[in-house]
Amino acid sequence: MQSTPLFLRCTKWKGFTFSALLLLGSSGSLHAYDAAIAPEASSGLTNTSVFQAQTFAVAAANPLATEAGYQILRAGGSAVDAAIAVQAMLTLVEPQSSGIGGGAFLLLSSDQGMQAFDGRETAPAAATGDLFLNDDGEPLAFMEAAASGRSVGVPGLLKMLELAHQQHGVLDWSDLFAPAVQLAEEGFPVSARLHTLLEGETHLREDPLAAAFYYDNGEALPEGYILKNPALAAILRQIAEQGSQVFYQGDIADDMVNRVQQHPAGSGGLTLEDLLAYQPAVREPICTPWKVYDVCGFPPPSSGHLTIMQVLGMLEYLPVDTPVHNGEQSVDWLHRFIEVARLSFADRALYIADPDFVEAPGGDWNTLLNPRYLASRAAIVGDQSMGNGGAQAGNPQEFFTAYAPQSDQPEYGTSHISIVDGMGNALAMTTTIEAAFGARILADGGTGLAGGYLLNNELTDFSFRPGDAEGRLIANRVEPGKRPRSSMSPTLVFDTETGEWVASLGSPGGAAIIHYTARSLIALLDWQLAPSEVVGLPHTVTLGGPVWLETDRFAPETLSALEALGHDVSERDLTSGIQLLINIPEGITGAADPRREGRVMGD
Ligand code: DON
Image (cartoon, rainbow, N blue to C red; front, side, top):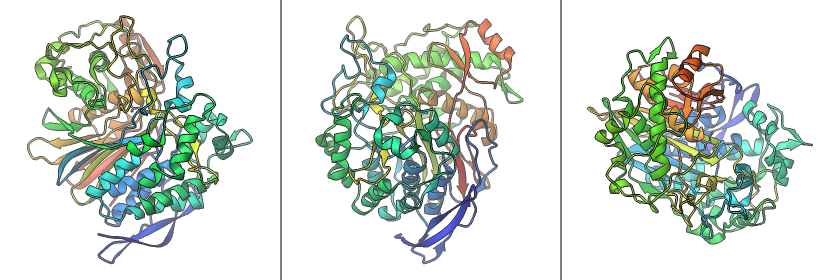
């Protein structure tokens, strides 16, 4: 079905009126949208509204982005069409988290089966293992590496979306950018969350374009400020009209390469040749049986699905009588969850990296999920914690590896989108520029207009050290053309017996994406909690060392009980952004994480 943008219509959000694009479907009927977009606070926890739809639904991290996806679905667009419109809008309204300067993993279930579209950034051809080492051979501080040209990988998002659209698009590519172009030209209200993050940010202020665009004499633009982004509007218009190639060669590409190569805080190796050479990949998703479900997720270079399914798989051997009671997760269950997370993260650190560069243990990533292997790993869990650094990687297939494990590094800014259309397609896409505001480089595409899009710092997802003290190499070290290991975990769940779609979910949160998604699957499908309870449950995270409990969400007795079991416990903000859609007899329901500004809409 082709569509033609017709005219503009007004809708309200936070007292702000914007014109929404209406689309005409092939049936000739007008698909109009009238509902006001509800206000959504961003700091602290918000109430998750109860939501229900019959045919299609979209959940995204910002109401304006959800609205864009909703309009596309309502105009007869497919889930992939809607994801493109949501992503274009997120580039504008949630620039801190994702955008055309970054990459994404799109997991799709359609009549062609399951596909994993990989738009992960790649390292430039000139990148070497010492990219993030200083002159003494020591790793740079994280922000020194991230806020510079050095960290910028070849953006993969647009080529990946274009490929997915060629296979699954229903509406014209050009129509999908119209809502974002329009709001970029007319202006959108700066959200509370964007304001807060701008205010707390130091490195973005050092970028001259960003300082002039997001700040007024050093003050972060206030919440509600109507921000126009003419540079992004012009770039998105070109992409809409000429396809993704206009981003990878010509003025936009020249501008990107110049900014990266000439960055005052550290030059990066990105070239025009790297941009031209970028290829998205379509990978085989990994579907893993768990209880009465098939849980399908993204294969490497994401570590997400494998690590999540190790956690879920090991917990099957460690049952607890009352894992949760009145919304409180029991100490017994938390202890087991933390311990199996330690073991999973030890395997992840040793084995998982770009499959085009490293071999899976035993030649198959599923060896890491072998039930006998997971039973042997679960048997390591005792009454007392194995403690900080106590978990070692296992050996799933008597597999000889010469690799050294990678140590943990911080990660920060990402967005998740869940969509179900009326045509039987289910989609989960996690999208990122890595840290909040990425490399802190705003690029105007050579337009000379105000604003633009932010470049990713995805290369800091590689190990900063290429090897260990004994000279063993690390699987996830920097190599030319390689994709950095990710934690992003777009997930689709199906009923094993009927094959019916059950749920679509995922979250931002760096390595903690794995904990957020694993625990959401358990809360939804094992504990049978309602979607709003699932996304609202307090979080627990460990990467193998200290244990973080979400601030002010656990009873003091829980903290002390975990300490008594040998865990090194502290509290911190754990800002997940879970977008959950599930199948119910009446249609579709879902919830957006109360920790961010997400919203679910559908019909
Ligand atoms: O791909 C990854 O795993 C990271 N670059 C994701 C970063 C992230 O989720 C930060 N979120 N708040």
